[in-house]
Amino acid sequence: MAKVSTSTCWDFNLGYMMSHAGVSPEFDFGMAKYYADRVERRLKSPDVSGWLREIFRGSSDIFDPNMTSIDMDRYILNSFTRMRYCHRDGRLDFSQKGRPSQHKIEYKGLYPWFCMSNSSTTTKSHIWTLVNSRILV
Image 1 (cartoon, rainbow, N blue to C red):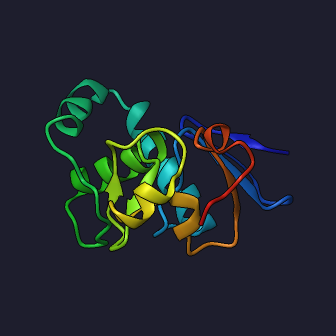
Image 2 (cartoon, helix red, strand yellow):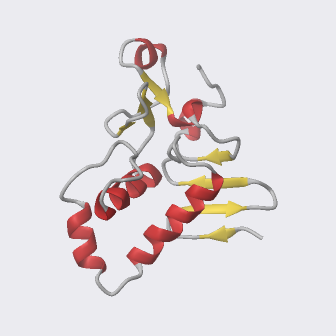
């Protein structure tokens, strides 16, 4: 049976997960679940307003296991809710919208997040609705 959380839906038996935007290429299936649960706990905490104020004071676009707790939460939330593309070096991009194109790939160095994934997990997100079932990479 699928487990639904605030930002993701997963089914270990079927080996899939869904997310609003995407899943960081740094996360495997287990990490994605762990980090989704982490953010879900924060969203349900009594001090959620203070936490959200801190979250929106900055931006985290690259994963570093040694980053501060708030930067890690920012990165996790950005990955699941805002990211559509990644730079060659793995940084998340939050400004590009629309379907993948050779222009974005060749000139901007942006790749759809699912083309960079280190995971064999099947994932779906809102970018799939833009690709018209075609992956250009």
